[in-house]
Length: 233
Image (cartoon, rainbow, N blue to C red; front, side):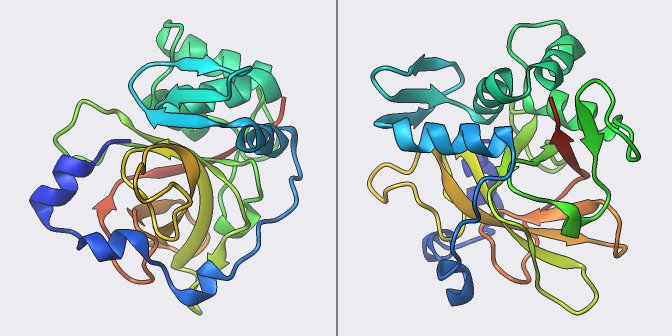
């Protein structure tokens, strides 16, 4: 999701803030892949030789080239690891290339008790595990043609406060704006990589309603409904 113009206009962060998260987060070790989706992301990580954030899908697996945006990355991962769940997202808008809004809407309409059409909606942050999907629609305050953002959980979330209203989440995604503790090289911070978000929950046990793009403990960057889901097949 390209939020550069919005972030600059709102003066939400300094350049230094985009690069740093709390020391405890920098020391975190990735969890072992626990699902086909997480395994597919790890496969891409091991295969990537070059990557850029573009509003297109230009992937050459043999050459290790992965040029895409967040929704194209999610579509690629799910087409390999959870084809039924991917097909539902494709049908959402009738196009061959889904957008972030489609992932959010499919997850938000999925049941919470058992999977349907390859999707299970999660209602608690503590239930997230590697390979699960986080998606949101573009916040109302953002002037952009992007429809939102979609990312994959890389590590189980960390609760940052006693009440469970603030959570740090290590994710894998495609972006042109690095998150906290980001793995994308400083000289070319674009495309596939890992970073840290902060998600904020108004009611403990409920859906997140805001996020901090840079993974800082207490700062909210934007407010919007955030859907949590699991693609099971």
